[in-house]
Image 1 (cartoon, rainbow, N blue to C red):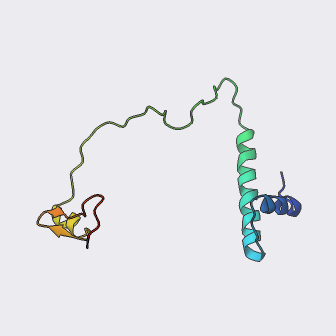
Image 2 (image 1 turned 135 degrees about the vertical axis):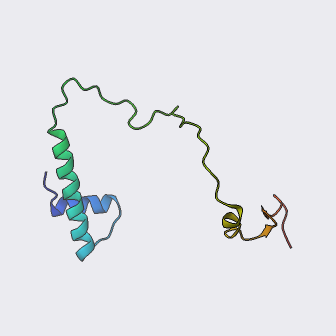
Image 3 (image 1 turned 120 degrees about the vertical axis):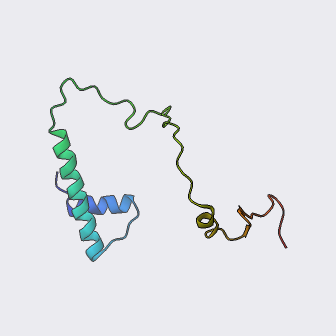
Length: 98
């Protein structure tokens, strides 16, 4: 399938994009690469291959619970806006500081 100028105009109108010059040329090239890729996928012989009902991980997937070492406290505290000893200081919830 060839992405024509009129098809690109229609897509841009539907997406409310106002592209000119290099942006338009880049989008046209990207769309043509995507369409070519999809056409190659369509050429695959998928006889006997069941369609995926849930691509990716199933919704109930839970990764194994494996502990990771924590970074050292000084490293964590250097990114905190305020700290108190070895603790990160945060404002009380629902109370304005002042």
